[in-house]
Image (tube, rainbow over all chains, first blue to last red; front, side, top):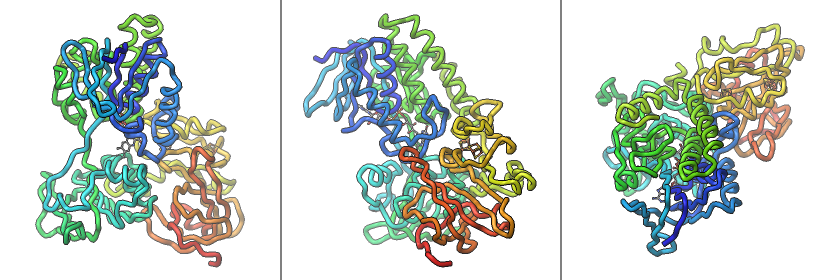
Length: 363
Length: 167
Ligand SMILES: Cc1cc2nc3c(=O)[nH]c(=O)nc-3n(C[C@H](O)[C@H](O)[C@H](O)COP(=O)(O)OP(=O)(O)OC[C@H]3O[C@@H](n4cnc5c(N)ncnc54)[C@H](O)[C@@H]3O)c2cc1C
Ligand code: SF4
Ligand code: SF4
């Protein structure tokens, strides 16, 4: 049995910031990350991030991840277990994990779930052909393993991920045939869209992919316009020559551990799926279990970092660590979140959070 | 339309254009950023404090073209790669456009590159007058191009690779 004050599950921006914040108040932390290297999505993000100075805006995601990790690694209060997947959280507060090929039991007084998100997939003919990728896989191949995933790609989805991964593909020397999007408007930030448009990549809104075809691998894809109810318009089909179709059709919170722990959950469209109901300190309905980052609603690394800090301060304070100092830091984090969410992009998140509040959360 | 194809319209651009009088006086920044997003490195990076967001981080950047001296620091700092510098002060027909660039190969000063507009369409070969590194950490280069004055509000990118030593 491994004992710790606070167990942080997941080493993305939310988890790293949670660990750093809890430790800054004097708590002992164990951080478990299922990958070999902590950093979460940041490991793959070679572009410069948005946000303000407080969230390291203007720096590249990978640099932000490295900086947070260095802080965590040099902190004597924090222990990091990599290649360690947390498997379950039980009623007596014990968590189990796979660590070093063995089963590990962890006895933690508080748990912060920061497991991030999973990619959505899309049903269409031929989506099981080699060459149909999720955007996350394409990024891992290119930016982590240094492997060029294809010669010419059709990108499906013009949210931030689709736009950014298209740009990164071009940086890797891959041609992007087009970016298609079912909705009538580009969903991602328009500056990202303009960036690839001025490289000559067409962005086609109200278009969907009908199928991927080829002899044992993707050789072409068929796309078509869709009407306002997302139905393909007959006669608008066109074939695009490509050797890969990359799906960037959204993320959904990775909440298995929250379900299994018995946290009350709610389906909130604005937060992109089922999320644990949390209060204003990000504590779930299971006392002592907190949720921070994409797991409590798909958003951004900037807000994931601040949520991580908020959960870290809250968990540490609830154990009696520097409660007065914590109160001020919690308030500051809550205000930082409000500021980040104050624009149109944040309005959707705030609407989702309001729904969580209606369901019994108080954030 | 910008929200459908990623190309800012003439109307969008009108809102951020410096006056002709200011352009004629020398380099000045143009923030082609038209959406309220939570982002402000342009504001915090400008040594002249020429860029502001009175309504907070989700506001659109507003440039005081009198305070801006065209130094270009914001160009490499902006994560949206949405800021450009235009200098129409030289006599004659040429203006200088400075734009952000994050691709390899990197052109060299003196080489000729293909100039692209906001839709990626080519407008000919133009001479690179300067290549500036954004720094070891920032990694965004800025490329200064000599273009005919009438194209200085069109050219916003360069074609990647195939650079020539002669026009
Ligand atoms: C292409 C792309 C571009 C993006 N661009 C930006 C941007 O410009 N600006 C911005 O602010 N945000 C951006 N984001 C979003 C940002 O990356 C995420 O919002 C952020 O990483 C969420 O942080 P997180 O810590 O909640 O989750 P993640 O970063 O997903 O980290 C979760 C971690 O938990 C680990 N984990 C999961 N389950 C377990 C388990 N059971 N046991 C142990 N470990 C587990 C995972 O391995 C992972 O490391 C981008 C995302 C993508 C995909
Ligand atoms: S060019 Fe220089 S002075 Fe002008 S806005 Fe940018 S950073 Fe400020
Ligand atoms: S830094 Fe660039 S993308 Fe961000 S607000 Fe300023 S101009 Fe827009």
